[in-house]
Image (tube, rainbow, N blue to C red; front, side, top):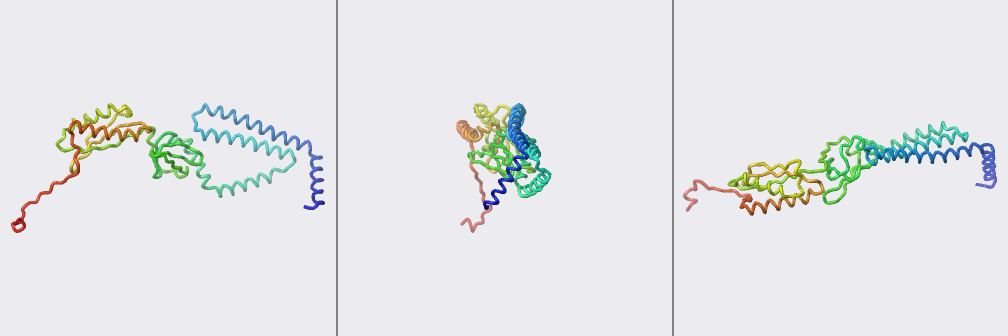
Length: 277
């Protein structure tokens, strides 16, 4: 930019400030007041939302949206005070919004799905779920993603749009064990079941309500299968399963209850004389 152009711009700015100094001052005051009011309203709204049964992302979203709305109103009023025609600006913002919406379809899909999850609450933080081929304990529910924690402490981050509309299996905050053990066909089943129930009764990690289920499940080729289905908290699930299997095996061994290995009896009937010789 040459000296003449710089001088022209300088004079134009000085003339504009001289003619609209009061309006510019009022616009600055409006913007400052907008910042102050938006902060105050946001804080009041946050304190009010903290008393409601809402997820943290919802509270944050509502508070931020209100603050931005107040700031946007203050900016529009300030521009109008300066004598700027805001009509074309609003139209330009509308066109830009459409373009941004088309470019960010995936992001907006995650956002809408996140809001749907947060408001409908098909699951909550701390619950164990299985969905879209993944499973784990819900750790974080954000506006765009949901994070699950696997039993091996690894994390799975699922885009929210992958969750909406899918079949969800929500185990809640407790899980039922599904343990099976085989006993020989000559076993006293009532005694075997009583031994298992005693093992369950002395384990402190198992829940008394719901009551554990112990019942004959199946008749196999080499054994009668007994199903053991007690309940425990998610935090105790893995360790408790290992403890139960060890305790049942030791209790059976102490009471001489046989856990047979797979076996098959083969009989040969009517052997020809030539083959026998």
